[in-house]
Image 1: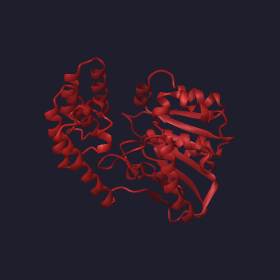
Image 2: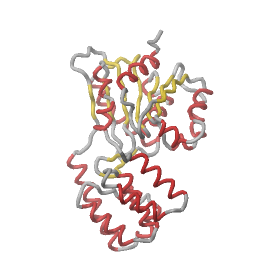
Image 3: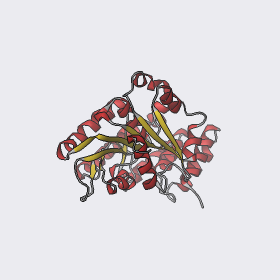
Image 4: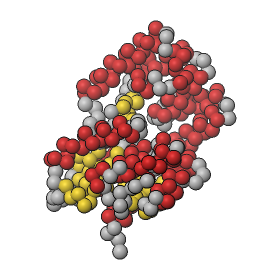
Length: 314
């Protein structure tokens, strides 16, 4: 059985080896079969790298006829596409893409979500669950549903940067904080919160965002739970340094990683070492899974993680 994360890794390895044509063909072979936006993006950027401007524009125009389009913001971030910037046809594609984006926001396809069990008594323990890059609050809600089922008020903020249909992106941590604080304000007013039980959680880049906010002391969070946490702070561990000079007293965290996550990070986890060196107690959990995904037994792991962060364990 062909697995998406394996194809993505092979494509990345081929690019590192300079086998651009092979990487391009492999991405094109599997992008629709596996319904992968990441492979479509790889295929697109590799076509540009190979100098196939006409094919790039054919692909983009075809994507505009479906929900597979990439946003103008994201396309303009791609170095390989800068060679197309002055072409009238490409400018027309960008304009058409902007129109699709405007319609996306008008239709309210994605929005921040709150989950709470009707049977849970207030005040509610609060979990801020932050989606990963390329995902959205609905994806987050499906994975963290176990928290609401165990009595937590769960709020899922939404990144305002758009990659494509239903695909949202957290960018700089300064911008991320501003967005999340603003979106959470209504929930904090609407529901009675038990501020002794506030936890920040997230998947992938959302995990890194949760870690940053917890280290900044937002909402007096007791700790953080990251699943496959990663991002530009993980890639440049020295960026954690200002946050670790005086972390909130008693802050702790749980970091969960699949074998794929650990292999992709490569080598020693410098972020983990930095957190521990700063006196932050971290519980590292490794779980069996195929790719960059939540563990299948996450509902059980969530309960244990919360107990660790809130110090309910004996």
